[in-house]
Image (tube, rainbow, N blue to C red; front, side):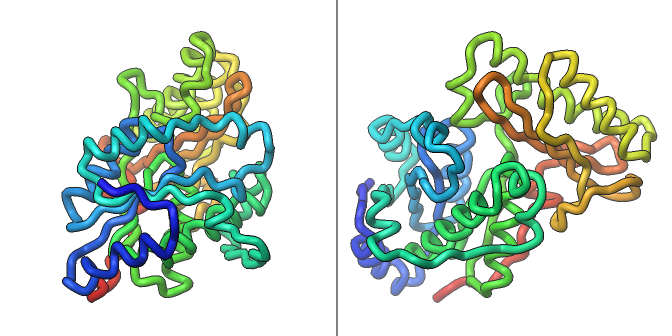
Length: 303
């Protein structure tokens, strides 16, 4: 594995494989690898000839300096894990490399960024995401880019970005990876105290309770959500939002008459967590996002 910190160097490294017609996969990350990140890397390794993993804690998508400062970082460990997974190139740019002096461009996606995380964290959060993702796609020019299903709204936003700007890349959204007790893996989980870690399990229980209500025949969205909110309240967790929506529009539903997505965000102690679960009108309500709501259509591969 080769660690690269300069944009020009990565482009040069990928020029040869691209001329040879080899497929390139990109896994954008902010580091602090866990099994969820590794599952994306393994998927890329299975499907692509060349695997690039970016490791960049993007300051543009953080609203609070304290949150940016507290975000877990361990480049040495991440590099060891990436090498173990046979990553070809680990791209670790500095903030100055990605946002040089005079940088003045923002890529902004409308509508799907304006609710939920956008409403809570502000439009600038998703502007930061879409700008850095656009840069990474332009820098690496991958055939496929891999994202985790836990960040459901982000996945929808990135898919819209690629489609609207005609970026010739396939956006592959992979299933959420969970702990045995159901908690979605997140780099922020390490910041939870033992008590908070136990309370955080309520997010997934809430999603499952709502899915179970739908399986049992509930079609009123308010009533179905109430089952989930009860689980959160029992654990002393107050959600920033708990909503049932249609993907990929993320429009809330009043009546459940087709496949939907349950979204939840809550602060447990000082740590803010998000999760989601696809729900269908049959017993197989837990099928993975990559096989249902979030699967992007295939775009032509580069030659």
